[in-house]
Amino acid sequence: MYPEILHAQQVILLFQERGIRNIVISPGSRNAPLTIGFSENDFFNCYSIVDERCAAHVALGMAQQLQKPVAVLCTSGSALLNYYPAIAEAYYSEIPLIVLSADRPLHKIDIGDGQTIRQQHVYANHILYDTQLEMITSLQDKEGIATNERWINKAINTAISKYGPVHINIPFEEPLYSRVKTPSLQVKVINLLKDESTAIPDRFTAQWKTAKKKLVILATLNPPVLNKEDLDILTSDPSVLVMSEVSSNVVHEKVIWSIDTLIAPIEREEDQIQDLQPDLVITIGGMIVSKKIKQFLRRFETKAHYHVGKRRAYDTFFKLAGHIQVKPQKWVHHLPEVTMKSTYQKRWMQHFHGCLVKRADYFAQMPWSDFKVFELIFSRLPDAIVLQLGNSSTIRYAQLFQMNATHTVFSNRGTSGIDGSTSTAIGAAMAIDQPVVLITGDLSFFYDSNALWNNYIPKNFKIILINNSGGGIFRILPGHKDTKVFDTYFETKHQLTAQHLCRMHGVNYKSISKQNAFAKACKKLFSSNDQPQLLEIFTPRQINDAVLLDYFKVLK
Image 1 (cartoon, helix red, strand yellow):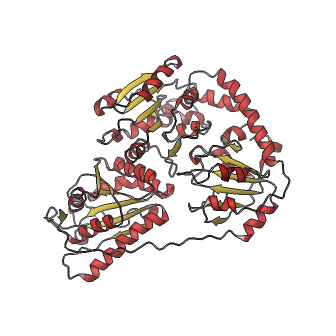
Image 2: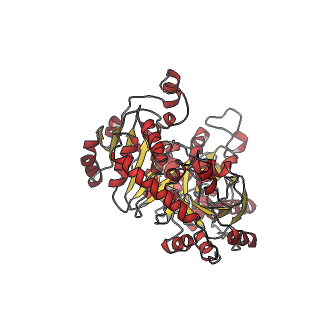
Image 3: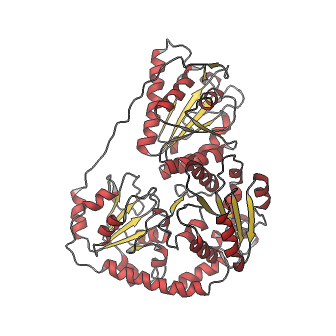
């Protein structure tokens, strides 16, 4: 069955023609024409998620894994405002998300009609393309039909080619629930025009040949874009030092895998930190997590910075010289042959390995704390999983560990918000057959607790919740700790647990608060696949910051 409304038919038919299968729908009446059309067509996979903020993050997680557009559909009014956090994340993480919002006709806006706001251009600052469809009431409206076709095609093409969110606002007038057996019109697909740049600037090549100290930073790369052969070529140049972040999904013996571990011991040693200063910086991937590398490269005024790849180029160090829009793999294979002698890579790899020796000694006596929990977790995670990391403390602790090469790591680092980590991880788990494990903190988990209000969570989905009774990251940052203002408004102390939430939503719950219980609980977590599992690990709130800060002191 199809909705009787003609412009609703256009959306459904064009989505089918373009292969947009996955539709996350939040309930409402104004969006009924599209809900009917999608849900009664076997081509589409439809999911009903009540909370729009969660729904949009679920769609985000699905699109993140599928690497193709996923649509979210909501009714009019405040519903689409709840999509905004996920839209901003999709914009900065470059994930294709198509927002479909139902609306009142234009003449009913701002006259006091119920559930009505100004929906046009509502995401203006964080959207790649937005449009409002024409209301088609007759097949004789050839111009309106052609206009809608063009706009819908452009929205889909933009999401695919520009890697990000688009918004189609669709006004409907009652009646909303009328159906027809077959569509009343046909649609035309307007194919995507490919615009691919393949040039590597001569200026870059000249700078690469003469630079004795080249720093390559690999940030978010989902999916991975460099294989071992590529990394072998890149690191064969002794003047090239490669640093990777946890979500780069890069593991290689000649790559620095913990940027902060390398920089922390020398950041106040003027001679050493200046020696690390590169002549040329190359970034590949998305947003950079490490504050230390950003502060370092800004402090010493990076001489020239190039970004390689199709992903958006950010002037992170205030010296962006160019955006080389070729695939990183192609860039590596077109680099000039090594002709220059340099000890840059060797010196800093030796420094890093020296830090790792001190690290091992520190780990051997490290007390039960957030840091100890992360050490234990990363030593016991099973192979071949998709690892989703929450923001704030979680991603920053994870940056201090070498990743398992069989894992694929994701995190919402576009806006770095805590608001949708669980929903995104669940969306990812819904989209793939591979097991998904989420590691998250307590504030992030409780903030997004409606994520569990979801009928589609796979039985093998796991959550590791580290509960330190507040926002532990604020204890690491400068400030006056253990005051009423700090405890209430920054750290946000609480005594909540996930036990009752898990019982309500059918998630198996287990908690521990001591190191000697970890091994048994972890084994049970990963061996049980008859329902979603959550392991809540309680850590001592007041020593976590000291344990982490002492780690950086020991490295010096």
